[in-house]
Amino acid sequence: MAGAFLAAAASVRISDVTPFHLHLDVVGVLGAMVILYEYGLRRLAPIHAPRGEVAVTSGQRKAFYAGMLSLYIVSTWPVHDIGENSLFMFHMVEHLVFGLIAPPLLIKGTPWWLIRLAVKPVLPVLKILTKPIVALALFNGMLGLIHVPAVLNLMLENEFAHFALHGILFLTGILMWWPVLGPIPDIPQLSPFLRMGYLFLQSLVPTIPATFLTFGESPLYPIYETFPRLWGISALDDQIMAGLIMKLGAGFLLWGYIAWVWFSWWNDEQLHTNDTPRVSSTKN
Image 1 (cartoon, rainbow, N blue to C red):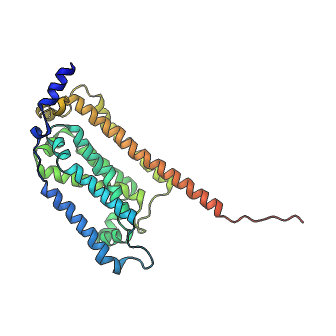
Image 2: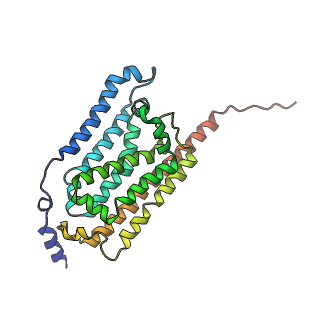
Image 3: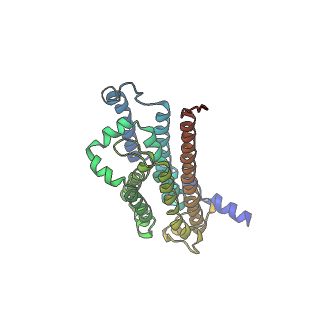
């Protein structure tokens, strides 16, 4: 059995599935985002950044470029190509990054004054789209749509559709995180209690498609059965691992942030309590 598995794994290599190549469309889009970010910090900060406030912190820069790096890794060779030509689990990793990893990093990594300047033309619309119920519905509706077999087939067969749908998933991911992070004062973030409840609801939704993937008795996406099976992983095992990535990966990220919100809230309450002056009482 072990020998057969090793033979199957050795028979299909990454170079057999997809040779190395640059995704110039991805490089172009991400490069433009970096240029706009740096232009905003270098050229617009002297005019629009609040006086007496640091235009951007080192922590913000690190968060922004961590988000950009995560987008680059999953959108180019080999992760994107393996997900498109062999293993569905790699495709699921892309979805996890587009929805739950890159958006909060980029929001936290961009100064509030720069975000405010960028969204000013569409602020009235943004106020509607970032309402908690609307943002949850848009993101999870999109997440569900791209896991419909017919839509997934379209993404695998049409590179433009693949690029566009992943872009929409990323944008709805930003909307979903907006009520939690509240990057601009025009649209304040939820209270800590509501943020935890909001993220709890979000953590429940991915378990629905994850359940179908994990406990399915046959591949839900027959197109993956026609692809070379990298490392000898069967289409059904690949699907099960993709479901676990969605369920456990999303749960870990969202519950980790819930814990962070709770501890930050508790710490703020302790600081407030300790800073409150005590009124000394004297006996008459």
